[in-house]
Length: 283
Image 1 (tube, one colour):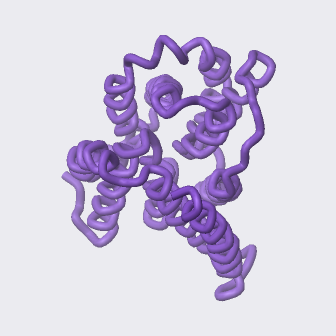
Image 2 (cartoon, helix red, strand yellow):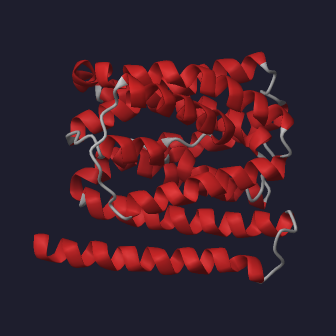
Image 3 (cartoon, helix red, strand yellow):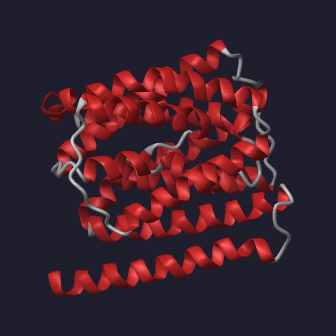
């Protein structure tokens, strides 16, 4: 049984919100849960619980988008094949790299991707074998090390010009494969420990309620505005986590380390202003 301390209650609330976003957008559970949860737990304890939870979440999202999978699976095949070596390398690194260093890697890699996505960066990218396989390997390494892959996948698929249903189906297919393979590799490496099982039990409560609620609510919300607000929240959380880990590693001292958070908020506010000023004429 999990111990219900302050961290446990916060984790339940985080997972509820993250599951709501995932139900609405088709991704976002790990990229919202992990940055906040890392304040209380290490990746080595948190990752196995997140991955098992994501296996079921991604299977559910894949099931409800199954009709669009035949139209998209060939475009994702290079990415799927590239995932395998990346996952093996990332999982091995998770067992040997210092926890705070893994936290630092997590935040440093994710923050620019979120801001790129928030900026609406658009460049035509085709998931050919030349691009898809190395991208899949990098994605597998990132996912097995941090359990986060939504932001880079969203950037790639947005720049391939996929329509909404193909976008969700492509995300669901890639994330289902990566979560299942990562879970198997974690099992082989003996990463499923008692602490991870306790965290998993805490996550279930939020997911059971959040996923259906998000799927229902997005029909009544402006999906672009909702997605953009969620990205802002995610960027601020990641920046806060990065500031904290810089203090823990004694790279910067407090309050100087929080310049990362302040800079991220300023950049995101500019991007938000651009987004909403463009949205009003469109409306």
